[in-house]
Amino acid sequence: MGDPLRAIAVAYMVAGAGAIVLPAFVFVAGYRRWGWRARVALVGAATFLVFQGVLRLPWQPAFSAWATARWGVVAAGLLASLTAALWEEAGRYVAYRVAVRRPRLADAAAMGVGHGGFEAAVLVGLSLLGTGIALLALPLLGAGGGGADAGGGAVPGTGWPTLPPEAGAALDQLRQAALEGGMLAPVLALVERAAALTLHVGLSILVAAAWVQRRAVLWLAAVGIHFAANAAAVALAQMGHAVAAEAVVLVLAGLTLYTGLRWGPLLDAAAGSNDPAGTQPAVP
Image (cartoon, rainbow, N blue to C red; front, side, top):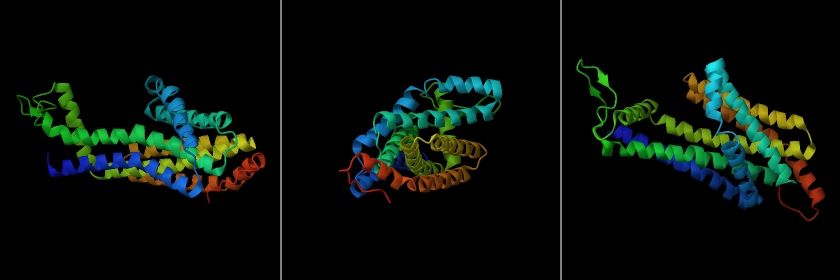
């Protein structure tokens, strides 16, 4: 393995570790500063697991294939973004209704970190780590780089003498994609997770306000923001504008968090009126 590929592999592993550690670091900081509760964060993680992992992801590939065949790739991508937003925000609302019925601002933030943190660690962090490990392991699997046919043309995968041609071709594609993405790809992946975590906190606060105030428009706003962030990121990335995609998500995340925090005093007041003894500090 050449030095550039080794450096890229290490960058993927660092980004993967960062995606796993970041939510834990944020939660510990919130616990110390604002009294975030681990139970509430675990409710947020369970919400993602149930409403995405159990209720959406199992049928999503077949649905996307059907939608692509019927309406095309763009429509299928938009539908995937919409279903993700609907399922996750519905899950948040159900979680407030069932498990955290009088959320303070600190609770809403902790639930968002649990929700977004589980996604970051399990779906993204482990994937990035796996990619980095696979890139580091390439020299152990053979020479790589493909072979040549009788006419001198490239034959993908034949440069991996210890592997079947299909596996060799897949490793060639992995290496080529890593080299094309360079160091920027894992860095952007980590930035995207930080932005997504911020977005989840803001959305969690909006849905908490929707539950406490019985205002459906706030829940619909959360769905719309979630959909917009997903759709914009996917569309821009597919057009080759990865940096712009992350910039859009960062802006949406910041605006959503700012908007959500404005509902914080209302959440704390509502929780305090039902629990006079509660004096948990609000997130600023």
